[in-house]
Amino acid sequence: MAIWQDLVSDHGFRAGYASVRRFIVKVQGGASLEERAVIETAPGEEAQVDYGEGPMVRHPQTGKYRRTRLFVMTLGFSRKSVRLLTFNSSSRIWASLHETAFRRLNGATRIVVLDNLKEGIIQPDIYDPKINPLYRDLLAYYGATALPCRVKDPDRKGKVESGVGHAQRTPLQGLRFETLEEAQAYLDRWEAQWADTRIHGTTKRQVAAMFAEEQPYLVPLPIEPFRFYRHGTRVVHLDGCVEIDSAYYHAPPGWLGRAVHVQWDEYRVRLIHPVTWELLREYAVQRRGFRRAWPTDEPARTPPRISKLLANASLTGNNIGALCETMHRRDGESSIRRIQGVLSLARRYGDAIVDEVCATALEVGVPEYRFVRRCLDHHPPVAVSLRQVDPLIRELSHYRDLITRRTEGEEGAHP
Image (cartoon, rainbow, N blue to C red; front, side, top):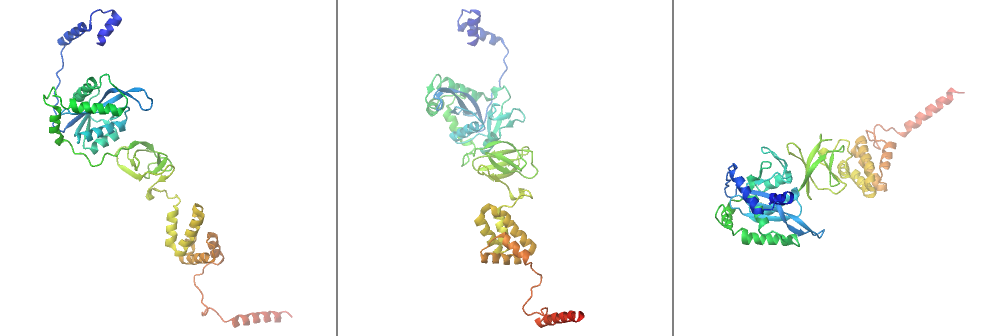
């Protein structure tokens, strides 16, 4: 048709389209054609997926008619197809359409044949393709494996190509819909009434009957749906953290300045080795502006948290813990340095002595670090405590006689 139109427009061709068609058929008949192999698959073994053009649907935001994308999954054995419509496409939408198709089929195939589109294949390679991580994990969750075609070789998935063309030529030809839901409902009715009940040209059997034979061979579905996540690459900053949605998550030691692969959803954040895909760290999602880290990942010079300081104070002494709790309850975060000072005094003078001074501070109503420090500085503890009656304590008369002798002796020496 395109050749005939160009002949009429550019060269003044006066004959009809049928003349051009007969000529092209004649030329093709004399050419040597390459024989194509017929691909036969066992029940439940393979599905083929592809995108095509869908009908015009009014977009809910712009209010204008917009061309949709038609996703088709066709089973290789029975030719049963699942057709879904969407406005946009992304790696998550592409994976979500697969999950919806598996749920509609009530099972998954072991192999999924696809083109090398970016939503599924990041780097095409017939021997070792780089598959999108989200797409790869979804297929693995359902027990399937991606099998990309050769670049520019769509014949490997001719069954789904036929399924796309069948839908474009039959139910969707020239139709427009007001909503995407209306278009999907119309397509589902046509699928059940006409596509599933037709006699397939190759198998000479009804598609629905063959699918009933194939369905028991599909991989059973997991109980829960796949948990979709977002993914990307982050560089570990000088504080040892990567930033995800304005929150900060600490990487293991030794990763400063290096890139790590990250996965996150509304519940969990995972840091993954970019080469081996080893799970490095996993955290619960943190609020914006806050950070999460394992205690073993904290640098040695990082100030301890207040909860750890109060726990250490309680273990050092009951009165020490009570005094530190009182300071924190009254002054909040500003009391951290003073609590550290009390613990430093306990290491310097001993836990028991500082605990007694803290008890005095609580008793007189002065729960302050400065009070405890001054008491210890002005009245330093001695190693041996003296009693009221002790051999080391002499009678007062001894000191009186000593003073008298010294005084009288000095007066006698000077006339």
